[in-house]
Amino acid sequence: MEAFFRTHKYLVEHIGSSVRRELMDEIDWSSRLIGIKGSRGVGKTTFLLQYAKENFGTDRACLYINLNHFYFTDHSLRDFATEFCQKGGKTLLIDQVFKYPYWSEDLKYCYENLQDLKIVFTGSSVMRLKEENPVLSGIVDSYNLRGFSFREFLNLMAGTNFRSYKLEEILTDHVEIAEEICSKIKPLAFFQDYLHHGFYPFFLEKRNFSENLLKTMNMMLEVDIVFLKQIELTYLSKIRKLLYLLAVNAPCAPNVSQLANEINTSRATVVNYIKYLKDARLINMLYAVDEEFPKKPSMVYMHNTNLMFPIRPAKVEQQSIRETFFYNTLHKDNRLNKSKEKNFQFLVNQRYGFRIGDKTMRIKHISDHYYAMDDLEIGKDCIIPLWLFGFLY
Image (cartoon, rainbow, N blue to C red):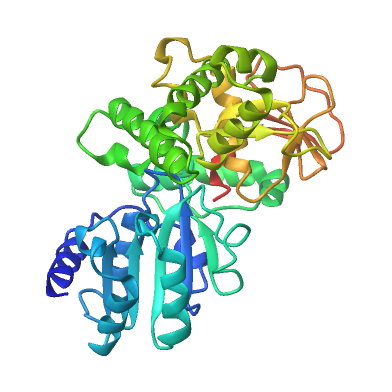
C-alpha cells in the first residue's frame, strides 16, 4: 500500500493548475458512494486529483488508486479498501473502475461494510450506474463530467473568472451579459480555437492534438464500446466504418438501410451501433418531439466540434460546426428536439425555437423564437451571439 501512497503524493503535488470544473460544486460530497462518468479525454483523472488536492493535500486519509494497476489482478478491491480503513483512510478515489472485473459487487460490499469510508470512482460514459446496474441501484450518486465549455476554455486561456448562466438568463439578459463580458475580453478571438481543440483538456499537453484525439476516438471504440458492451472484436471494423460514414455527413438524417448495406449488417444492428456511439459521446442523436430510441433519430450530429476535424479536416463546413456547438453546449441541462418549423433547426425544452447561422439569416420576430448568430459580439432582441451559449456551464 505504501507504493500507492507514494504515487498519490506525487500525482497530487504535480497536478497542473487547470481550470476548476463547475461540477466540483454540484456534487453532494456527503454521499458515501459517488460515481463520475465521462467520455475518454474529458479530464476525469485530473478531476479526482484536484478534489484530493483541494480537500486533503497529501493527507493519508485520502488515497487515489487506478484499477488498471496489475496489483488488482491478484488482490481484491474490498480487501484493499478494508486495509486502507484500518490504517485511518477515509476517502478512496478509484480511477478506471471498469478495468476490475467485480467492481460493482466490491463497491457494494465496501458501502455496506465500511461505514466510515467514502468512495469516489470514475467510469466510462457508456456505463449505466443506475438503469442497468441493479447491484448499485439506490446506493450510488451518479454525475457526468463533460469536456470544457467555452466559458471554462476562456477562463483558462485568458485568466478570467466568468460565471455560468442559465438558459433563461441568456434569453432574457443576453445583451447586458455580452456587454459585460466583451468589456473585459474579446470572446470571438478565442472562439475558433475552442471549436477546433478546446473541448478536451488534453490540448494543454505538448503533443499533436489531432493525432491524440484520433487515438482517443479509437480507444472509445475499442474500450468504451467493444469491451464494455462485450461486442466481438471482429465487429470493430464495422463500427469504425459506421462512425466514419456518419462523421463525413454530419449533421445528417441517417439512411439506416443504406448504412446497413455499407457496413454489411442489419438495420437493427445499425440503430444499436448508433446508440453505442452516442453513449460513448462520439455522436449526438436528435429526435422529433415524442420520439426516442429505438426509433432512428431524425438527425445525427458529432458529439462536439473537436471531433469533426480529425476525420475530414479540409471539408468541415462552418454551418455544421455552428449547429454541433449549439447542440453540444445546450444538451447538458436542456432537452433538444428537431424543430417542425422550416429554417429552424432546434426546439428546446419543447418551447423555444432556435435557428443557427450567420449574419445572412433573415430575421422574423416570432414569440419564443431566437437566432443564434455566429461572428457577432453583442446581439439585440431575439438575436443572440452564438458564443454566448458556451456560458451555459
